[in-house]
Amino acid sequence: MALLKEDGSLNMEWLGQLPIEEFTKVFGKLTREQVDEFWSRIPLNESKGPTRPVMVDYTLEDELRNGAVIATDFLNKQREKYGLKK
Image (cartoon, rainbow, N blue to C red):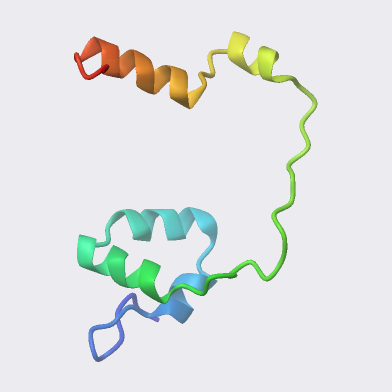
């Protein structure tokens, strides 16, 4: 199958059947118009179920010690670095 249908629209069924790794590669190559079309056509409740937690055997503190950052802290540092902090 192909990314586009004969009429030029996105083949949503084909995209939905791709493994996540392949979907990520394909999605990264879409044009802005194709991305907009994708988001406008995707079902609101695609997962058909509630969000499920991912259980891990480490704490946030462990993850921070290993180099992870909290997104808001990172963004605030970048804003300060580039003089965008109000």
